[in-house]
Length: 137
View 1 (cartoon, rainbow, N blue to C red):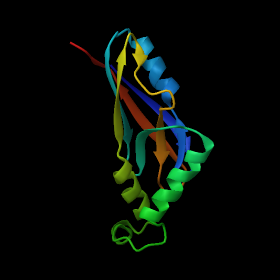
View 2 (view 1 turned 90 degrees about the vertical axis):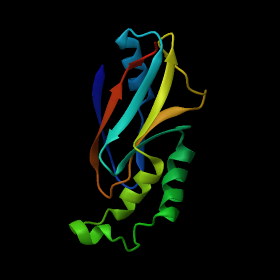
View 3 (view 1 turned 120 degrees about the vertical axis):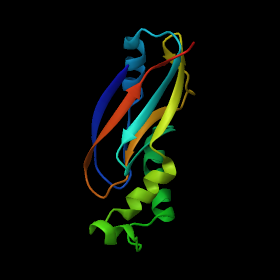
View 4 (view 1 turned 30 degrees about the vertical axis):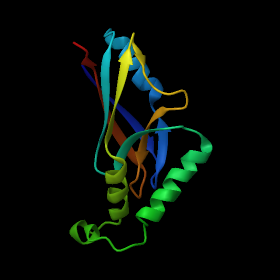
């Protein structure tokens, strides 16, 4: 069972919480226990878990900007004539997916742990995210 969701995000590390969408997908699946992979399609999008609160929504993009600054030289820009090399680097560091276990149709997450999708591109994007149910044996 696979579901695609779409979220529109500004660039440069804008993020949104998709935990409720993941929870609802698990409940609607009818599967009691297993895992749900959450995967971002596209090489400047990322998926992770974070305490989704205003401070960390600012902190993560700020720290990622120190790691892969927008104004730096990226060979990627020569390939396509674009300006999002830093976004590709940031997204590859965070990664495109997480796998969240669930039991009794409930995600097993920490109290302050939410699933988020992040857009590291340099422009507003519609990010496509795939959810899949993996049933426990």
